[in-house]
Each structure stands twice: as C-alpha cells, then as structure tokens.
Image (tube, rainbow, N blue to C red; front, top):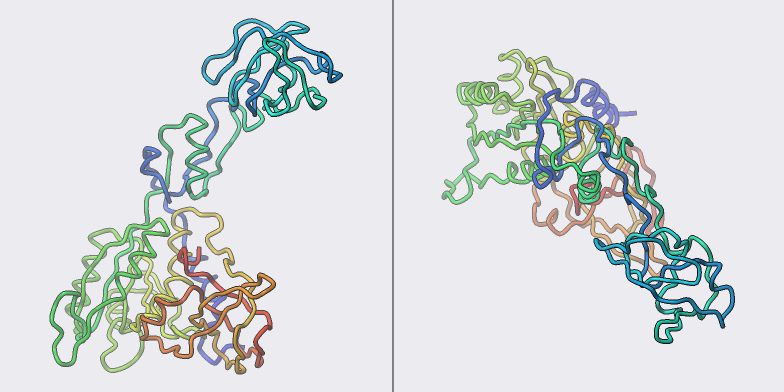
Amino acid sequence: MAPKNLLPVADALAKILAGASPIADIETVPLNAAFGRTLARDLVSTRTQPPFDVSAMDGYGLRAADLTAPEKRVLLVGESAAGRGFSGAVKAGECIRIFTGAPVPAGVDTVLIQEDAIVEGAMIGARESVRAGQHIRIAGVDFREGEVGLKAGARLGPAELALAAAMNHATVPVARKPRVAILATGDELVAPGQTPGPDQIVCSNPFAVAAYVEGAGGEAIDLGIAGDEFSALERAIANARELKADILVTLGGASVGDHDLVQSALTKEGMELGFWRIAMRPGKPLIHGRLGDMHIMGLPGNPVSSIVCTLIFLIPLVRKLCGDLNAGADHTQPAILGADMKANDQRQDFLRATLSSDAEGRVVATPHALQDSSLLSVFSRSQALLIRPPHAPAAKAGEGCRILRLSSGGF
C-alpha cells in the first residue's frame, strides 16, 4: 500500500490518461512529413498489391508438368522482367527467362530458380523437381484494393509509411501534434551559455523534456525560465494559454517549500488539482490538474526526477492526445539483476542501470551505485530504468526484474 497521501504510480497514470481525450483536429500531411505522426482515420488501400502474379526469384517460368523428370527439357521463348513483362502466353513445352518482380504470364504455373536450372542453349532442364506454385507471389497476397491497411491510432514509423506509400497514398490524415509548453522555474536557474551567479546553476531539464515530447509526436514550446515570484509565473501561464498549449509542463517548484510557488500560482489561475504527490522515487512531488482545456503537469526540479516523470507520465499523456490506442501500454521488459538489492520501502523505485548480457544471452540490469536525482552524468551512462515495486523484498544478483529501456525514450 502506498504511504498516506501518496498515489501509487499505476493509479496516477490511470488518472492522467482517464482525464485526456484525443485531439479532434486533423491535418493532412505528405508522407515525407508524416514520420512519427499518428493516423487520424483508417487508411484504405487504393490498389491491390501485387496487382498481378509476380516472380519471387530469378529463374525460368514454365509449366510444372513439363519438367517431371531430370531428362526433360523445355524451349526458351522469351523473357519477363520487372516493368517489362512477356506478351502472350507460354505454351506447353516452352519457358521464359523471368526475374524477381516480373509479371508471370499466362501458361506459367511455377518458377524454376536459376541455381537449379540446366541450360543447354535454348533448352532448359531442372536439377531438382519442380512443383506448381513455387516462387510465385499471387496477386493480392499483400493487400487488396478497399482493405483497411492501417487503422486510426497507428503511429507512423518506417514500416507504416512504406505500407501507406504502397497503397498509393501520397498524403495521410494525422492528428494535430499536441502543443506542450515547457516552463522552467526558479531564481537559481540561468540559460545555457550564460554565466551563472554565485548561487545559480545552468538550466538543463527543458531540453530533455522537449526532446522526449518531440519524439513522442508532440510539439515542444519553450517558455523559458520564470523566477520565484507570482507575477513571473502568472505571465508564463498566460503565455501558455495564448499559445493554446494542450499541456503546460512546469519544472521545479512542485513541492511545498516557502519558494515553491508553482502550485499556488496555478491554483490562483483556476487550476483544478487532480493530485500532486506520488509514491515513486525519483519524482514524488508531481502536480497533475486541468486549467480549462489545458492539462497541467508540474514536474520536480531535479533533472533526473523530471526526466523519469516525463517517461512515466508525460509521454503517455502526449500519446493519448495524439489518439494512440495503446498510450498506456506497459513497455517494460524482463531482465535479471546484476547486483544484490536491498528490500524496498513504500515507494516504487526507478533506478538508473546499465545493460549487458550473460552467458545464456539474458539481459542483465546493473544499477549504478549513485542514484541521486541530480546526477545527469549517471543518467547519460544508463541504458534502462530498473523498476523496483513498493515493498519489494531483498533480491540477489541473478533474480528476475523489470526494466524500461531508455534507448528510444522507453517507447
């Protein structure tokens, strides 16, 4: 059970996604601009693929009944190449030279691959017996005109874009990208390239969060840095509204210290608070709410905390707004521990870890010794988050665990 007033991670994600609906706005974009976008409507094929029977191999097209014994031969009478087929029909006792992707003419029911062919001038024989139908791709074996090739909610990766192109779609209808406004907060922050004062640090969180947002299909909007004063926060919130942000992400100030003003400023502006503390480490102080139509995600200020919360909560929210039917799917994978682990407390841990393989090919996750949520250098050397459930008992190296890979944002 989660500690008092701390929401379990799974419950927090469920609440975030339950309060989000896919964006209704649809855009039509060319295929070369559609990578990573989410299909807004079913995509129906406008053609049959392949449109006719084609050869799957280089060889000879013929009738299987004509080469039933090694001593038999057929006469070579022509050629069929991709884009330049053989005209007419192949008669009994005849064959044609045929190449991969070439149309299979009438009269041909098999392809003798060239490695198995006996070539004696214009007479062709077979080293191996042939059978009808081999090495021929039947018309429509991939898809047929009128079939739904891609369903609404599909994310368009390389394979999906190739399929859309094969179905003869030059453009695709996609959901508008969710606009995610990102605001760093705190008097201690300066932008990269500036000279920090004696009590200041360089702001780093927004760049990681923006990259994950863009990778998930959103549009990241940089609102800059707001100092620890209500007027600066109010201006930034107003700016997010003017930009019609679908999500406002604040970084820092999500706790209840004297200088943590974000929640108070959002409440003053009319935010309806959903929750603000989660039973997880790193990342306990996290604000979730709504300000009119705008979702609010107040992430912790420590860099690793904000990145972990982005992966676990913000990215699924972005995907839900995109219309992804699998926005809340579990992307964790099994692994084995590379080190002994102590018993866990009431919070779910997300430990930065490196990955390797053991002699049996199993994935081994070894947590870094240093897990402080401010250590970006440790995070940059990590390949996964090793997940330790609340109240997990002590575990030995070699026992099973769950990980979330970081190589592609975990998704």
